Image (tube, rainbow, N blue to C red; front, top):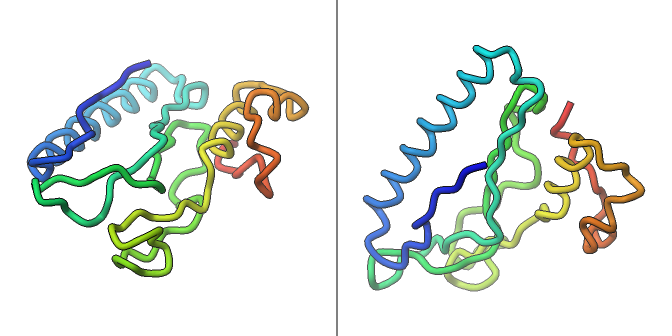
Length: 148
């Protein structure tokens, strides 16, 4: 398990985010290559997780503020990849998917659903998912179908 901080960029975000995303991309590619070389990629799933996103609108300090819906990455040999799960937002300030006028996208998929899908792959019985994710019954589906 690893983490990479400093994404909370309320100022000077352009250069910082470029560097962070480049580092993340290289680390994920190296990890994936290592899992493939070891022949265990179907047994390892890597994912990103955050409970918030950044606004689309840049603030006065050339950064962005806390927002709502975001994107996550799930990768590994058991992942049914190559597609988006959920609905990609209309990227328009004040548009149909903006919770206000800052580019705070309204999520269409809950972290509970992503977590429950991963938990099922890890072996958590369907009957136990609501105990692990108490908000899960509020959503139409508990398994998003991205794991083989």
